[in-house]
Length: 405
Image (cartoon, rainbow, N blue to C red; front, side, top):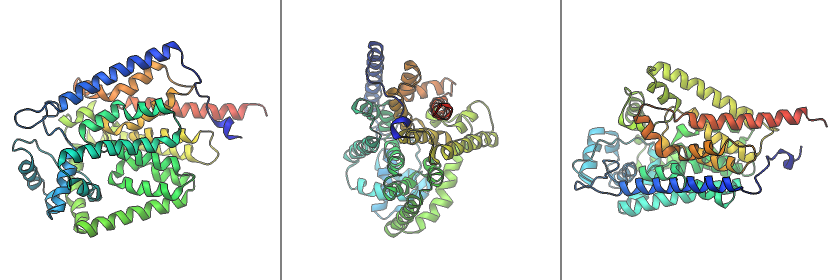
């Protein structure tokens, strides 16, 4: 089977209806981005954002402040919730809402250099730098300029910037590693090792590599993760790892399992959170999440086995979508992989209806509105895209088997 025969047909031209849909969705997307960003940077008299009711840097303030404390030799404060909150209020504003340190200590290797800058320049460097990383990661997929632009300006990326979150970086590490894994396994492994700054988004990576027999990438990932752990210990003290395990890990588990709803559930989009929203207890929600995780693992093992009738970029993008379904802990700013999937499907002949793609692309902007209204349907977006892509690949493989030689 030649590579050409394996590749799905691309759309060669755009009809008037395509142009109208893209124009309308772009106007809505830019309008909503303008609304949210303006609200984010409308600062009240207490120094807090009108949108977030906290700092306009939102989650980035944790990364920057944690880096600042580490540089000042007070890294232990990160693992004492009361001391950490008091330190944040001393740094920023006495009426700052409660925040917690939630990251593995290895992210301090990024946070500490950023904290050498004032927080606003650091926020800009972080936001634009991670989006550039995302763009570089999707370039090997050869989606074309318009599709790449749709990704870097997508609602998921805008929402990631609004939160000051790391979704653009983690998506870049995941997609970038998967994209180059067959040709440059060591480079892929390095990217996967760096993804351990947010390990729950890399659940599927070992299964992809094992299914493909990519032992060099596995070795490089393990070596990079070990090197990052050692470097973190050398710079900030090896006790940060024990403190993370005994203090931060149980804290984040408590946040995950807290009674539903909490304010942060407004942007939650996983199977676990959806189960909680419809009334399941913690144990039952974990059970449903386990089923989703096992199904996602089975899907990527099938997808990444050699000889599968799938274009490589389909494997990459579909795995990024399945990663959202595999983790119990995920929010709208983690759905940039969905935007990449929409961009890929938009240039293929075998694609969902245009209106469905538009809804999937815009969804991060309205997820919190629907969630607050009691409609926790966010998990349906990655679920639909995953099922569509899996069925397309399966149907193509089946038609190839049945086609007379």
